[in-house]
Length: 392
Image (cartoon, rainbow, N blue to C red; front, side):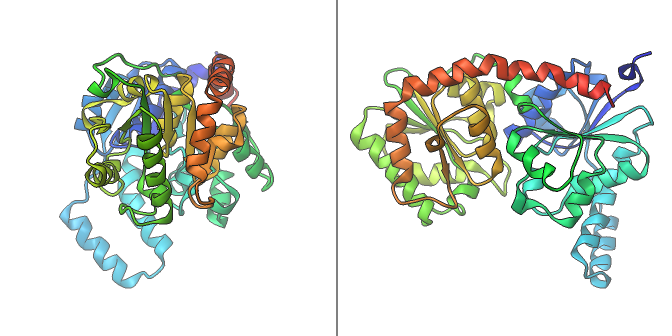
């Protein structure tokens, strides 16, 4: 009997929810790659109602995340009074959130840690969940990850070695991990690349003029205000588009979580400019593939959120990635795109964003041709990931 036959279910403890449309994209793309029925794909979800509306529930069985009840909140407050160690506090919280879900796994099940760029930040639930299932003797895969040299901690390095397999979504991550002796690393494109645009009604800005799609986040803007140095770069770009071209600008929110809501920056920009050539996509009422449909109709795209840029790449739209971590650099490298198509929001020179946009306009056909030339073979690599799982 094949090894695959023994894997009864796949557990996704770090799906979170589609308030980040990237989480939605990873869940749906993973389901398509695995080709499994939804009863074998179990996702822990912090907003089941939202994910059901977005259609995630058609791909994955959604399990509602455990709520923090009053008794637990009291216990946690008491625990914090006596335990000063921040890592121990996190583990106490993660134990409450995740152990019930992970205890549903049996010896033939597989945990997929789908956090994507979760390891680009502080120690978190990625560490806890893999350490927990490893101690239980269960197998796990770090699924479609990115992690940079500066992101690594001793705790992360220990946890990385507990994964049965690490699937990196770009080669720079593989190289970083190899430098630290982390083995069992394979490289495949992000799962979202397999998704297709979903035809829907386009905003009216597409009716008469060409459109530049623009996605921004508080991470690249240095917060939600428009006062940072990089916010000045963004305003210079918008000024250039309005003054020197006939293009319309469509602001495209991609993450709607309260603490990271892209709409806050979008609303601030529309209020600042009050220009009919600038509009905002109704992302709240659009799922990931519908947002991809809008992006696919843009003449150009400039994006901060990785999965918004993936939508542009996968549909052949000449793009500039506004990056700050290894994930953006890795995608640009692996797709053979020019270095100037990436602007690092943490390390940039004045006028660089406008300069890159001008270059994109000059080399539009070359960039589009490069994307179209690479994309079919690039996406097809994902069909091989199931072989890696069988080898477990």
